[in-house]
Amino acid sequence: MKPELSILVRLQGIDLEIRKLKAEKERLPERYDALSETIEQKEAEIEELKDKLADLRTRKTEVEDELELELERLKKSQQKLSAVKTGREFQALSKEIEEIKKANKAREDEILQLEEDIDTLKKEVESRKKEIEGYEKEAAAEKKHINAKEKEYDKKIASLTKERDEVAKEVKPDLLARYNFLADKRGGVVIAAVDQGVCSACNMNIPPQMFNELLREERILFCPSCQRIIYALKTKI
Ligand SMILES: [Zn+2]
Image 1 (cartoon, protein in one colour):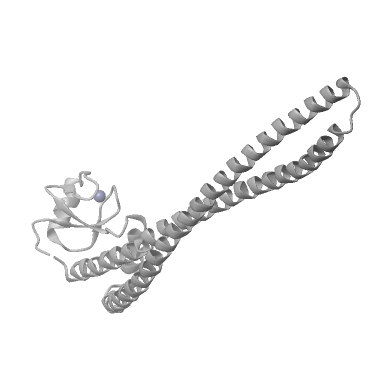
Image 2 (cartoon, helix red, strand yellow):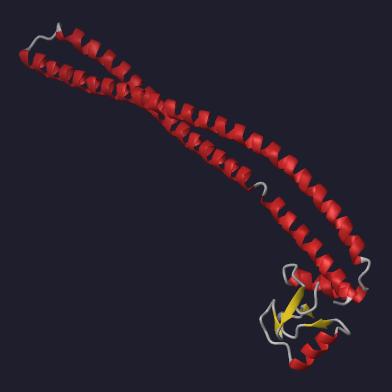
């Protein structure tokens, strides 16, 4: 293999490693992000429960106020009962009293039911809060882990980049520019072996004449299909 090609292969090796590390670093916050999303969801659920709770409390106050007024009305009606003169009046008043009592009983039942529902909702809010606390603890630990890992990755990437820059100095500028351009377009894989006349990267045939030239290793050649830098497989890297 031509020496400048060997250098490019080395460069590609380093670049691929840098790419891999950067991709891994990018994925580090995945679990943390998922945890944050869960926390947000739970917080939204709490807000919803609190809204419901507020509605129930408002309703409870309403019914309690009604009940208070109606109890007052009942008391007055009962007082009036002893003062009525005719049987008809007595009957009408008795009926009214019965109706107030019935309605008040319904109010009392509703208040009890509301109290029960309020209790249930309060418990649900508490349990959501506990869940959030657990998730927050987990997220904090995860954040710490990510920060430490990121530092490790940055260190590795920085040292590889330094090495890369050194190696890149050994490549002619126009070839390096072409290599960089292709690395961008082809996911970092720029150099391809040609096996029995076929480019191993794009699986297209190399014209026989070009393949013969490739075997002579006189100059750098590019795959006519994928434009990658090619070398014949028979040569050892
Ligand atoms: Zn190709």
